[in-house]
Image (cartoon, rainbow, N blue to C red):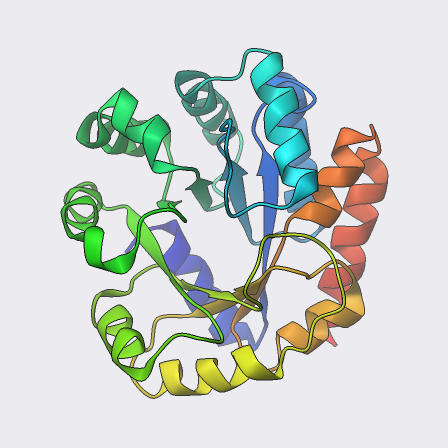
Length: 260
């Protein structure tokens, strides 16, 4: 069991919902990313999703696209992301999940990247442009290092795909609330909640809802059937605007709403 499993077990025992916060590595710079992660943890984050900047982040909306572009312009690279993880590990044991795109990792060498990510202190990976059918070798490499490779379900995921996903799921299952890209907007969470009901009939792996969660009210709606919610664009936008304090106030308000 790694830090992700331990955290979800701890949350379940306490009867609490998890709060996953996405932060783009390299904004405002490496030291600023470290500070943002530690402040987010103090504000109530349970897990940090470390965004690995990429030039064509196909699953991300305009805010995280802009954040990736800024981080790349400032010189953020995959090895430097791992350096940030090492710095976090000197002072925190919060679970860390790297979210990035496969080209970066293949250029690095996937097995080498997984080994180096584990050594740095990462606990899992999210790779949105690798479909379930093509993830077998990657899942094996992650498993050998004790990393979770997070898989996805969406409102349109078929029963067969849900069954296949549940068979090999570990860490948590990323439940995408809508078909589209990341970003804050009004979401009807009932379709993904129905999918989560089907998922929970087949696996005990926790479910975390992402896409569109940007307020305490949205988080409560998203958490109805799930074990956790994922908040990204709303936090990243405030960090980009130099408003880390406001980002942490948002995280804290979501934590309070979930705990009610």
